Length: 196
Image: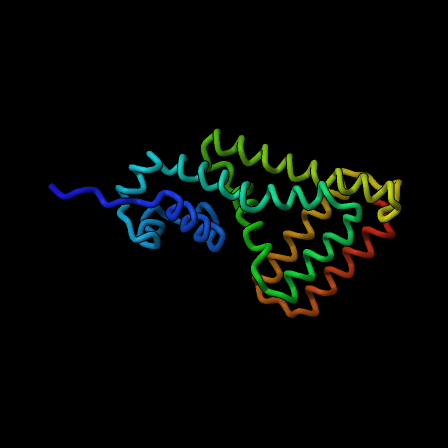
């Protein structure tokens, strides 16, 4: 009888995350993850029991890698418009795929109906935590005069969140740098001058 192959669970999670980032959580099969990880599908099921557990573990890993650092950046900033501009321009000019992982979260939000309840609850918790951190940054920015004090904090936080997502989407669609820069400039002007 053959011995089971030694499987690196962390490597499978990393590979699944990479595939989910590229294709979306609903567009990747266990077969693709197994092939990409050089393991059998049985090995993945041995490690995660089922696809739902794999999704859940990936979203947890994603939170640790992406949303917690992003949330912390917002919680520790005094000028939300400046931070968002820096993030957007870094993505536009440095092309280090820093924001691309952010897309996984949104493809997961869109795909929620097909995910199990435990994973849906985790996604909702992460999203709410991220929005709260952006709201905190918006309130600090309002108090410091970087955003008009009459602005609706929740709407501004959602606007910031949507602008980050739009930047990634346009960048991934290979839009010209000028289009992305115009988006960043418009966002910056909107946050500084308009009450949402």
